[in-house]
Image (cartoon, rainbow, N blue to C red; front, side, top):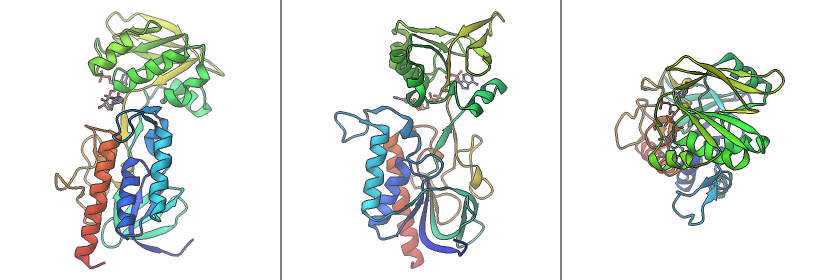
Length: 315
Ligand code: NDP
């Protein structure tokens, strides 16, 4: 596909924000094209049970919910494509975007729903295991299974770390949680759950120095930031749950971002960015709520804003 493709509405990213935008845009006959991105279904595909999305009184798994959202978007003929957008030029109309294969798309509107990605510690030893594909993970729900009956370490002190530590505690003989300060960031209920789980040991004021092992992880060398004391914690799995980074790098030359990379709304209460015709939904612009339901809500807003923009332009 070397020819330029001209479309009305391009949706970049396929989490709850993207799929909800697609459902609304498709039902408004905007003939949306969606590029699913590197992780089709987004972060929810790495979540186990979702119990707080209205309409599922018995809960639903993240992957199951994303399959249903995709089916709903397809029902209204959203053109859903595997692949991702890796370059944009929003300097004028039309809005130009390129896929990873160099396919050029000219869109009248773009909805950014690229979400956020897990952060890592940045240690060379951590990177080594990430590249070799085993031992280090940012998703307990995805990878915990591999460490059944073994000992694991998890870094972090937010709700994610607590949720993942609790999840691991059901599979592993022992989970050691490394908290860099002397307190949790997590909500009290989540922290209490971890504190009350017998096979989770919490080490406060503790930083990771190195992930140990040659072919596989054998332990973590950690340091107490108060006493300077170092010790090795044996483990075969090393999990990182220290927050997320918004996936907004490709937009930074055109779209206003805050100091942590989240897209800034041009007009609070709308989905508008500083570029006319470009709208944002979900975690790419949300460091506060970061919930599936808020992402879906902003996806709806983005599609409605895009529809009104197109109508005003006479498209
Ligand atoms: P948070 O940003 O809330 O927490 C990140 C944690 O990682 C903090 O405790 C932080 O420490 C720690 N951390 C960051 N960098 C490092 C580092 N280099 N070394 C060691 N520790 C580090 O992210 P979460 O992903 O936990 O949560 C994101 C949002 O999602 C929150 O609003 C949360 O409430 C929500 N959430 C809700 C859930 C639920 O209700 N079921 C489940 C999961 C998430 P420090 O505290 O020292 O800064």
